[in-house]
Image (cartoon, rainbow, N blue to C red):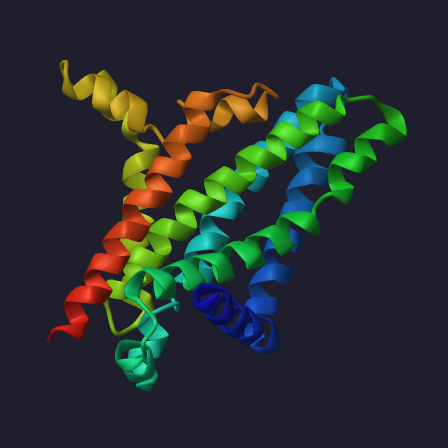
Length: 240
């Protein structure tokens, strides 16, 4: 219950402020532009290829927008001094972190919901499976979940939003390069880097309309690990 109260508070702050709507508008504009250029305006293509290109474009923008939205989660609280209320309240660190995560996911769900019309345009001159669209959006939500978790964790480490955003971006890029690192390392590290590949190993399956439990477990694991780390940081700060 406390987590939901914090989530509602933060979500209201996003929606009542300028930055939240600016991020949503900018991402929607770029997504629509890329969909027109790489999808509808790229010449003769099969419908499933247009859909895959949309999910590819949207996946990259989801990661960027997740970092932009969550880098303020705790950093802004510390910068303005309102984190004192969170640290001295009876709300546990886990509930606080979970509330921040739910608020970030609320914004990302809203963003993805506003893009649904784009795959719908494919039906005007083509035909794709509704299941393919559903699996692709599930993959986008998983990608958003993991990135939001990383962003919330990074935000607990700093008093300023900019360093939090940079650290979150570095972590995401490192995970994105996992498949490259696997090519230049030996076992068992190659296996670890290959499994940790944020995009190539897991998200591409969703883009193609293939649902794999292993990919779901991966993204949920990344989310859990970073949210747990964020909770530990908040708990440690309460004892300072």
